[in-house]
Image 1 (cartoon, one colour):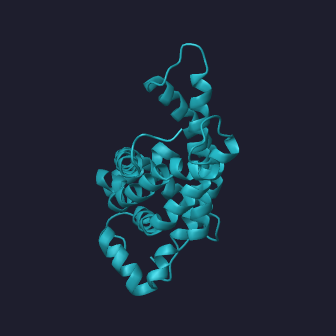
Image 2: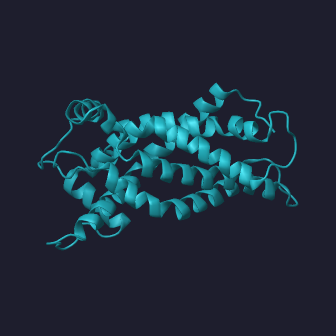
Image 3: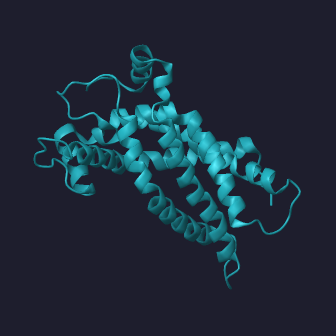
Length: 245
């Protein structure tokens, strides 16, 4: 059934919610990026003792060595990303799903149609937002204060990348990024949509906060489980550049 809220309304609500979530979860995401890059570097020759150990240990190490605010490195491009990606992937989901099944169709929509619609919207959204994702991860990957820094903030990073590497460099890693985000979006939105329908058929459940919370928890589990393997390769790809750090 088509949503009564306009595309602009859904975009604004989704972007706002995604930005709030980004601010709250960025420290963990920064720690995840450092752990992924450490594992990649540690597989080469001359690997020493690991600097970061575990997710919470990495958070503590970054805060101790670089200051608490370092956990929010990349927050500006992160918010840029969520405004664009978060707004588009959710805002486009219902229109794209309606396009596949028919705008006037009322009734059961197959899981395949939901997955396919979410794959398409996830791919479109990240194709537009890839420059913000690139800058976010590069800023997160930078080490402690005193070490060589390539960028003085998000906007300097956008400018420097274009100047030194060319405009196309902003779409570095676009193929694995589309793969990752389309898959995660499909796992998340399609499972959320489908789980909510299943929950609403259970006795005692109505379309309320509890139902959305349960569907969201299930969707998050599927998204992380399915998207994590692609995530590792994608982070390594988009942090590479023509210059050495």
